[in-house]
Amino acid sequence: MQDGRLDETLATFLDLHPEGFEEGDGELAAYTDAAGEKRLRELFDDVSAAPVEPGWEERWREFHRPIWIGPLWVGPSWEEPPADVLTVVIDPGRAFGTGSHPTTRLVLGFLVELERGSLVDIGCGSGVLSVAAAKLGFAPVVALDREQASIEAAERNAQANGVTIDVRLVDVVAEAIPPADLGVANINLHSVEALGPGLEVTQLVTAGYFHSRMPELPGYVHCERRIDGGWAADLFQRQ
View 1 (cartoon, rainbow, N blue to C red):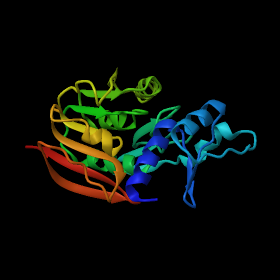
View 2 (cartoon, helix red, strand yellow):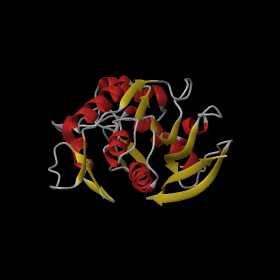
View 3 (cartoon, helix red, strand yellow):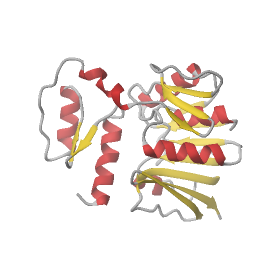
């Protein structure tokens, strides 16, 4: 499968199955129910199904392990964080993001290093980036997503971590995005490029695509690229 096609397919799977899926031998496998299988068949031509052992609903937890990014410890709620560290505890529920995916790690690396200020998280998923930003001292933090499950997860994770973020149900491609000093957009390439010239952030960190692709963002100058496991994250500066 070509990189562009694979990029789009993986982005679709992340939207459909943010709780996790398996990739191997040129195939993607998701643990789901009849409704989930129906959604896959509506989007893909080559879909097969097989029964799995009891307890598949919880197997996705095996894919999420704690990580360190600079001063941050980021991990799921069922792991015990170390004492006396900057802790971000994330329970993704039905929303993408515990920190373990390369794109999330890359964006977190930028957050650790960039100057603090206001921040807008475009396509917040579980809220891991928003919560981490608030822990690092960014304020105010606005988290946007078009999925109700993501809004609920982000609000729940902000409360669990004792931080305040402004979570809003917004179609980030079709609706206005609040201005901020820094924007982060860990979404697919098409959505990144669709943000448009109306985006009003001084700096923008984008991710959610393979290193073979580069977003085209009129009005912004590319400053830096980082790569992890074939995925990329980019830092842009508003002209």
